Image (tube, rainbow, N blue to C red; front, side):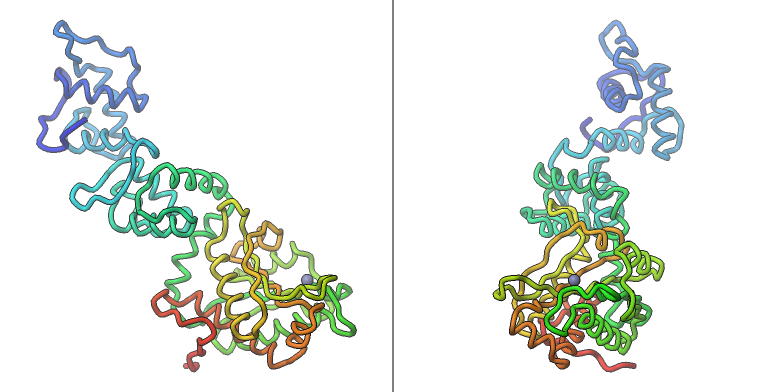
Length: 382
Ligand SMILES: [Zn+2]
């Protein structure tokens, strides 16, 4: 189907190439049987009763006015419906915007994954391009704003895995940025690992369980001072299961879940700070979780001088079962002499708490207002 403008409406009795076009489109949509209708004596296809019925059906499904005739609106809708995702390269053309069901499909997938692609209206506009470029950048693809085979592959892989599992979580990207720099009204669950009879890793009298609880309380204090509502998952004598900890965060309708641990290793050379977020390692991940995991680790290492061991996707229950972005921070090795000295210093633990606060603040700040790592100063409370 070629030109989109100034066509004569087609209806019962019409014949000719335009009718053949319409009938081909209806066939490709499965609305007209392949063998339906016989060309007339001249070999031209006729707008017969079956065609009219198929057009009415199509109009009804598409929310067009149902008259069984093909005017400009129906003709355009038929043209657009013929494209399904993967049929052609999609990109933003300001002169002649691309339209079609494939564009709608792309927009819906991007939105589902938390990328702002504008309304899913089937027109590839500048917002769709921006959303697509961001997606491509996040997934290590060439960020050219063109939806070709590599991008489609990534979208398909993700689309399937994410459906039913994490879309609402991924969708939070946009709302996080919208919520502004202050933390008033934000609910954050801080989860000190281990507890009760489970000390976690130990070094002499010092236990991971005690240290992360102390850290959690300092973080609670700083976040609360910035206006957030903070909940700890345990006191000194409890050791909830992973399921209990995530249920607690889900019930609290938390916006963010931060779990705290320390590490230990036989080798006394092992040291540093690692962070973990929900992800399968093959592309599917929580975009907000990954960003926060990155921010918090960078802030902590910048302020304490501990080694940066990077952020890693994991499918641990703790990360998987929480409905909000969830991050686990492993904040140094008790088995390493320098890490241990740092962790035993209350001032350093306060710095870690400031680092967590700064990371939370940065998660809420629009990107252009984002200060460099390690320099963020809490705005004075109103
Ligand atoms: Zn631990």
